[in-house]
Each structure stands twice: as structure tokens, then as C-alpha cells.
Figure 1: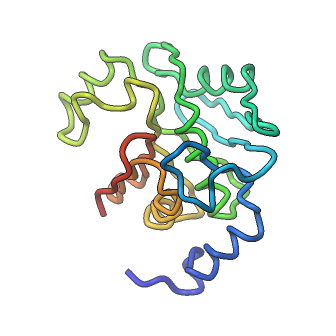
Figure 2 (figure 1 turned 180 degrees about the horizontal axis):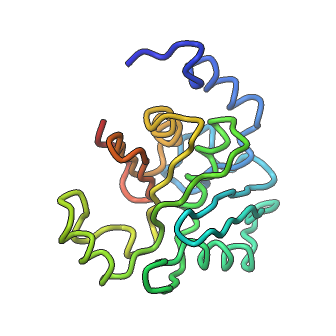
Length: 189
């Protein structure tokens, strides 16, 4: 699929986003793409949940330090909404989500479809769909399924892939992108 100027994310726009945002929300662990590593003074995350009606817009990293209270808010927000179980989300996943959001140059929040999943929820979803992994990274707090109304699945996935910092799955028929802090890989269409 070829990008056009009206699609929202051309190569030029992607490079411009790198320069314009100074990559303020970037992964900082060793597998991160060199231009992203250690950049920026703050990182923020902005999401809402259609399932719970909740929203979050918080700065969770300032001057090289994660803010514990902000990450606790993220953990609660990304809980398994089916049984209200919380889990410590891996900050690397939040970093990838934040960096991709910044690259997309949008003000709208992500819609969170799935963050942490308890083993019971994962088993239930797996019984209904072949697309749910038995050992899903969602159960380790290392994955999120996200959507943006103003961007296509392909645009969101390309921004996440540009971070070179984890797994990115395209689920076009369900209109969402999976992001995780596991091995760098991508799948779907």
C-alpha cells in the first residue's frame, strides 16, 4: 500500500515528526532504535476506554525518571476490565505506545481495547478466537491493543514499527493494532 500526502503518514511526515517532536516520548531500552534512545525530557500517555468510560492523560516520565504514581494510574487504567484485576504494566510497552502516538502527530487519545489480561480472561478469549495466544504478553502486562479514529491500522502499525522496540500486530478487520515490548517482530495486514 502506497502512502499519499492525504493518508496522514508519509515518509516525509514521519521524518518531520521525529524532528518536530524531538522524540519526547521514546523507548530507552537497549533494543530501541538509535534515534529514539534516551531522547526527550518528558513522556506522556493519553488513552480512553470505551469499556469503562474512563480516560487517562498523564506524564509518566520526567528527566530520565519514571513517576511511580503515574505508572500506578496507568496500571489501574490498563487493568483487566472484565474482572477488575490490575497488574504492573511493563513501562517499556507504555514507552512504545507513547512514542508511536508522538510519531503519528495526533492530539486524540488512543482507545484502549485490551491491556492486562488475567489468565482466565485470556483463556476465555482464546476459546472464542484463534488469534489469541496461549501465552499472550497481555498476561504479563507487556502488551496493549489500541485504536485511533483519525489513523488507519496501517498508519498506527508503521509508527510503532518505526520504534524498532517490540512486537506490532495489524488487525485490520477488527480495526486495532497490538503493541508489545517483546521481541521485535510484526505480523498481520
